Image (cartoon, rainbow, N blue to C red; front, side, top):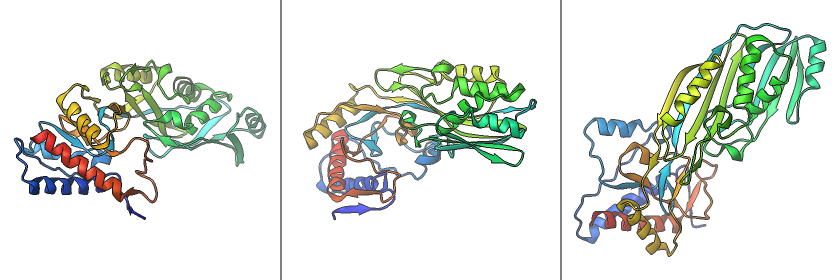
Length: 353
């Protein structure tokens, strides 16, 4: 029915093939160019962009100007900075309610849809705990205690406000129970400072700018046992800010609560002014090829534009079209694929002529 189905047909194998054909068409046209055009294909954008680092470390030529068809039209001239942090705290437990096991989430950049905690307690306390739980949190009897199960709604870590964080919901429920000692302190910090918040406000991280909006914060993974807790979070700061505006504050809060950072990865924010030659040229190409006049935009996601200097994301998704990347039965319409090839060829020509 006029569609190309397949993993990556929209993100990004389809646009990559369109760019290859666009480059071939530009060469065959014989149009005079002042600059050379190079097409770089990578296979590691989802897991760290190590290929682009290798390319640059081994003498690869850096672009004067460039674009990656890995976003949306008209132009994505801003991408939030992305930070993943793993932190841990040991526990010496005391009191009538003790933690045996705590699990929740699959990845730091995904809002978790489920989380659970197994607690050791008396039968009498188990009945009391069951009566203290809020909506969407249930209590299941297990030998020697109870299992507390929380449900949420999954969403991408760049838009955590579109989901409901099950780990946060579980921590808020646990914080209302008669916990004692170090366990109570750790749960209190995670519940009161993070909970189900999506902007880091209670941690003092509520940054915002006009270009990209607010900082987003997601507690994506938690695990624990009788000896300690480990958490993994993903937060994304606005395009005009830096890690220095939020990272030290977050680390200070963690250390004050007895947690230690075990690992941190960081991709700096990207912002190319809308008046730059690169953005104005791509905007003009988009407007002339489509007749549309949408403004450039900033996003919370990340693309290869962060991995190379002087690059922005340009296409392949048009305003109002369904975003089908990373979904079952991914496809792109043949007409849209051909339209992308035409726009990419025109953009190559306008930047290189």
